[in-house]
Length: 121
Image 1 (cartoon, rainbow, N blue to C red):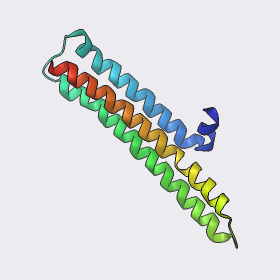
Image 2: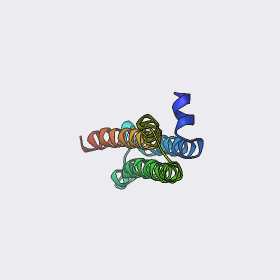
Image 3: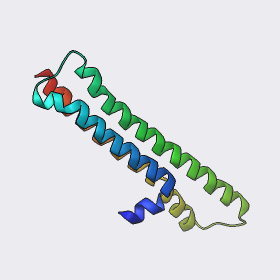
């Protein structure tokens, strides 16, 4: 797992990890009143922040992929010939940040869905 972290690039993977931790903190602070049954009128809006932080993670993951692809295409442009295996390997590495951002978004959406279901009951 740590190998994927370094393959995806420590900068964007580190930023995505911080966003993941922030999403968990937002989920805990805004979700505990729902689980305890002590919610107020603004609770539904507050648990919506969980989904928004997850969406931000997805967008940052896509940005990391686009920057990675741009730099890969610049390198390909400067080479005379390139093998298909090298191109496929580069594309695989470029998509790691998108995958991580999508996992963050999926988890945030599942947490939001569970809390909103509990809130509506």
